[in-house]
Image (tube, rainbow, N blue to C red; front, side, top):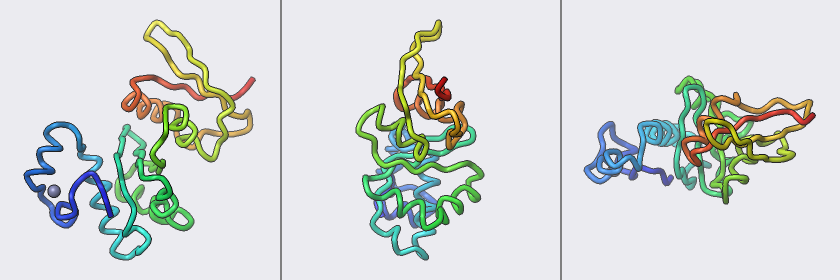
Length: 166
Ligand SMILES: [Zn+2]
């Protein structure tokens, strides 16, 4: 399993000097470490997790987005969502697993999956640009607007609002 911290640090409660340096420079966050270590401990029972790669984890007050290598999301979610459910109950937050996005639009689509994105517009507000994501009238976004927006702000420095089509 590949994660933002090294394999040795997955096994231990402390960090090696190299991983500590990544934390100090902000490259690796507490959330990255929590997700990596918890997934690692689950991987002792779930063989499918052996070869997955966690690239980055993003956290808002109620949501953690795990960004993984392309092709790995299904393994991290687990059959019937068993692994994300486990993670969610350990970390007390909703978990979304997203394969590494190609760009901002791709990230939005993956974040909202399985809800289809019908359009993305830019709104100009007094506080700056905001992405307006349009979804079908009868669908509900998979996570709260506010928390998905929080994640988008962290990655792309842009707020986001999800609205149903008119
Ligand atoms: Zn390390």
